[in-house]
Amino acid sequence: YRIAVFASGTGSNFQALLDASRAGRLGAQIALLVCDKPQAKAVERAKAAGVPVFAFTPKEYDSREAYERIILSELERAKIDLIVLAGYMRLITSVLVEPYEGRMINIHPSLLPAFPGKDAPLQAIEHGVRVSGVTVHFVDGGMDTGPIIAQRAVEVMQEDTAIELQARIQDMERLLYPEVVSWFAAGRVKLEGRRVILF
Ligand code: GRF
Image 1 (cartoon, rainbow, N blue to C red):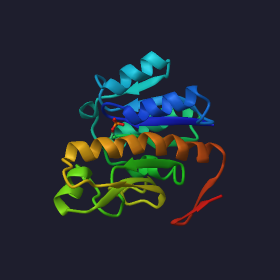
Image 2 (tube, rainbow, N blue to C red):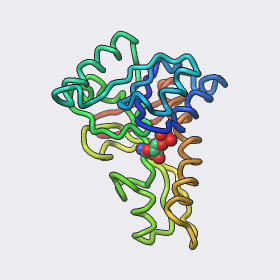
Image 3 (tube, rainbow, N blue to C red):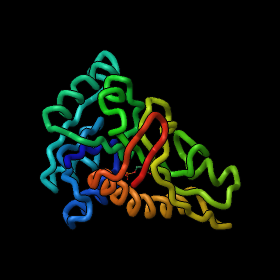
């Protein structure tokens, strides 16, 4: 089972997936990193781990669709079964959504549908919720709108800053994401319409 991880920045979720893969806990091979920032830390992590990288600079292309067509051919060449978005800070168009329907997932630092988009931990603090968390969901072309696969709650403490809450949420992400990928590798997740079936 071959996965591609898409990341834009630090890549701590990518690292958690690499570590899980090496430890034999993923049941999947990380066959490609796709990154829209050639200088990102995630690219360094891939190189250190011997994972092939496709890095590109979006402004060198006429449109989102134009670079996604190149990405699609890289994914097909690498025979990718599942796309795992891990801090990839760009919306995905139908060029990738359609061929990978039911085979592309994202992780988001809130309990969706609360607090989609940027700075979800800050949104949670500002709203004053007592519980937030992590969501893994299918990607459908909207902003954090696809069918939900798994969620884990994280308590918001009285004194939390957005940074502190984000750090605890990210600890939870690093546990949950490899686990969910292992479910896919074991054939335990299916999408039927907008219904997610786990078995
Ligand atoms: C994570 O919090 C993820 O939920 C969000 O972007 C962040 C990426 O962090 N989509 P990292 O690059 O994996 O460290």
